[in-house]
Image 1 (cartoon, each protein chain N blue to C red):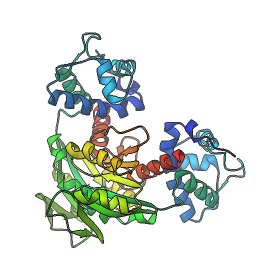
Image 2 (image 1 turned 90 degrees about the vertical axis):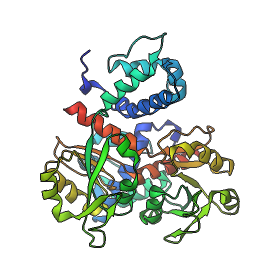
Image 3 (image 1 turned 180 degrees about the horizontal axis):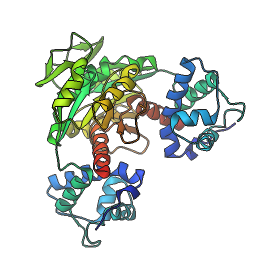
Length: 211
Length: 211
């Protein structure tokens, strides 16, 4: 079935990683089939919501009989694009950048940090789990000679826009941004943000809305 | 005006930190008044969307004449609960936990990491920017003697549910969870997740949906 991904709503897209996580967990636990109601119960969704979401991608087999977990895992892997390797560079080798470099979990999913860049002379020349930290002045020539898919921004917010523009000018079209600012870039560049403080503010909002 | 926060939709709640960020930036730049259309242009929202969102909280003054930026900042501070201090403990003093402890930005907003906890003997006894790392066995007595608002989970996913239950059993009702798993807790506990891999998967989805 032809999938028109442009029609998939933002809410469904935001649920995709969660489906993938839960299905991989079921697979790991040796579960072979799962019904939409069983999956819904685990995920805090209704069975009909799940069937509706799955229908955006062709449906994945019969109701009643349940879904084949292993097949569904493969489908979600393909939908999410996790069936290939992604090369990343990290700009900003401070606390957060180093934490990302130290985390080996991304590699298991096919995401490889190939290099890090910073302006701090004390960091340049260091390496973390074999990932070298280079002078940001070398970023352009590095990217020109390597195949890099994703640029990760871990700089302070004051530098994030400039770094984003540098990455884009080097031909990088996909940005994973951790700086607490919304970078403004051409429409064909895809930016995904992790705004830690936004998340903390939302927690606070809920604390205060409750009390 | 009485605000019924229970009626505020999830989408509006998710936009609140963004409003706060943009308004604080305007204030920092000395801007005194802003119209809903000016703010909308900056934030990528329509003026009517902004007025609708603001109406959930009483509206904040006239259209046409524009909003008073400083007043609006104060209003959002109150709505988000950023007009008070929050004490946090971090469980899991690995890469991510240490990165959070090293980041001083949260303190400026009133969030203080008072202590960290781990099971690793090589980490226990260390301190990061004055924040001590204790044995997780001491967590219960520590929390009993201190006023702690928020428990931050930075453990591997296999330990996250257990740690979440420990925190809740110590009386902590607010959890900021970085482990890549949805912890299951009583309904009166508020959990806010930062799922880094989910964010990366969504970036991948968009990369592949585009190509």
